[in-house]
Image 1 (cartoon, rainbow, N blue to C red):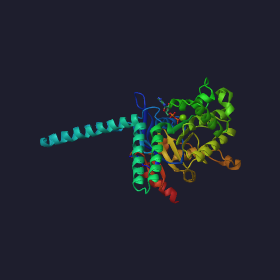
Image 2 (cartoon, rainbow, N blue to C red):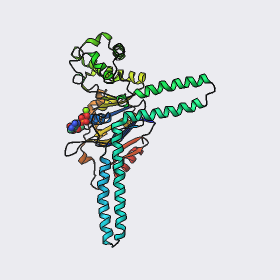
Image 3 (tube, rainbow, N blue to C red):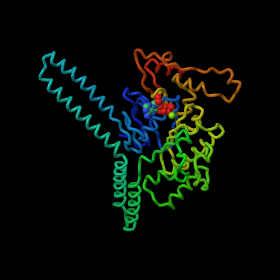
Length: 407
Ligand SMILES: Nc1ncnc2c1ncn2[C@@H]1O[C@H](COP(=O)(O)OP(=O)(O)O)[C@@H](O)[C@H]1O
Ligand SMILES: [Mg+2]
């Protein structure tokens, strides 16, 4: 089950592509508390965008689960098919051993065990497909049932008829809201390239309103009001609604991209390198806007960037990815004070310093996995070095990192 304290929980997410299973995202796990900002960094091609896209269901995950607001919204099936394959192989071996030992009476028991195991995994596959496909309805059903239970208890202990009537009214209103809530659109993505992501033939009004129309909203007056409200929220003006994307600067286009996302009343924003394509002078403005909206709208944010300097001040925690895997995750302060994985150290050494004196004497650290690690006898897993600080390492590295921190 998903942990209800976390608004988002990603468990062993894998996204493989093509016939040969190219591992764009390979066993990524993390969680986000409501209101938290998680920075995700790593070089181009390491799987940051794919992680975001898998979470918002732009393509079916190969394996693993994503829980959003306690509802499984993404569920791969490879973990179950792999388990079946492994168990079949193990069972075959056990049967051979039993037969060799002349215990043929136990073979039937083993066969029975395998049959049961396969049936259980198939049931998990069915549930996974059902959750992925019907997460919107299932979320509504669960929350409605929770509301009914909560209010029925309140109504039962209400002392007057008018109090009961009020509670009933409140419940109906909440049930009505939940019956329309689309949990998937509560996750919105802001894209890297504000030019490519805005249709040049659509006016700003049409772009911002598109998500509302897809949801079936037809009230033109309401739509206009929402569009104007969003434009003002992102620092533009209502007069911009009738214009086309090419009439705006890069920073303004990114503001339009943000308006298009927040018009859906999202709770989670996945901002995919939202400032990478912008001039440095404009980057801070867009980051400040996201920060303001975070407070005002209570947003939880995944902020993807390819270098650490952008995420440093904005993120509560930072996750570093390398070739589809998480190599380190910690609070921002901790990651900057005690970077442990050699790849994180390399990324940190690439941040330009404000002080030119230090800048001259500084060494850039490279990262070559073949030189940095010895994984011949034991491969790495994600281990907690100090509370909340996780690093991908094997036992020998784990001990060395602990020692490094105690120095
Ligand atoms: N739809 C796809 N089909 C095949 N390969 C893909 C697809 N999407 C991404 N990839 C590959 O997955 C890897 C990770 O890509 P991406 O998530 O875009 O990285 P990042 O955002 O960190 O730069 C890259 O090698 C990319 O070419
Ligand atoms: Mg990307």
